Image (tube, rainbow, N blue to C red; front, side, top):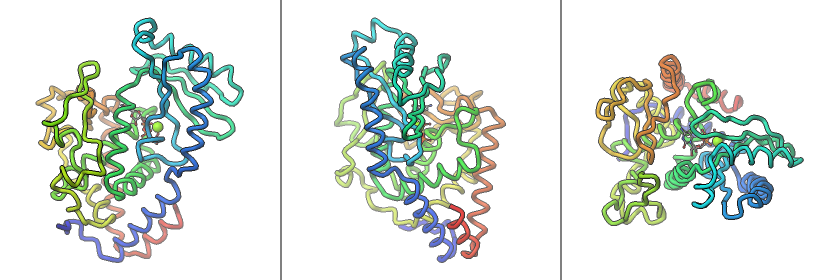
Length: 341
Ligand code: CTP
Ligand code: MG
């Protein structure tokens, strides 16, 4: 069951693999980095829980979703209990968060993003030099981070290629939600979708596995269930262990899929369904060229901030990456990447 579509010669595939593994070793969030984040979390927890005793402060995003680097920003979410929910509006809560941060010596408030779908307070933790942001009641983000983590844990190739993918897109300056580009989250969804649609998938669709036997977990009218018991995937997923492609083949396959196969004009990227989803069927005809369905809030397009120009820039970048990695079959050239990383 090995895909032979991506004909790279053996030595070149090996070098691509080495480059990706090296990148992973250099960048991946280690236990030590995770502990630094937990420390920062607890420093904020104390004063915030004084104001909202029944709330929880949780990490989400790449600190916990398996696609983190040691320099990734820290995404945190203050989850209030139902009673506090009713009494407060998000902006009032966030302004208290901002005031609390002002009082803490180790923290510097960078910005309060008031007018966004999800208001956030951006901060810097001075001793560690890490940036972070706090949002409130962002239950969907906490949940989708957990599901991404499950995907990342299924197969080691997912994290290695995932970090390389994020790194390449950052180097090419197309991964930045702030500059009306696409968020890392959007790129992670693209990656998962690619692994799911292969003839021998690397990843299953966790929201579809055993759907019949599990009950829905409803939140705000959306179903948050998925199969999270990835250690027992073998029993429920017939595709388990079937994909034996090398890292190099999968990497080139990813670049080729998004430059030669996937039809961005008419289709939506989804990680929730195995059948192709058209823009027409979702009435997303006038949406962004790159349209990505949020897996839980599937009425939301994760690419909605993208202008057509920026979508095209991303697709051109992927095409260029494909050309670079396909043509440099000369492993000596690829070797230079290793020094450059
Ligand atoms: N998120 C979301 N919907 C979006 C954008 C983001 O739900 N449209 C949530 C996701 O849970 C995501 C988290 O916000 O994991 C943080 O987003 P982002 O910082 O873009 O992704 P990270 O995975 O944290 O990547 P990075 O390492 O670049 O910070
Ligand atoms: Mg983040």
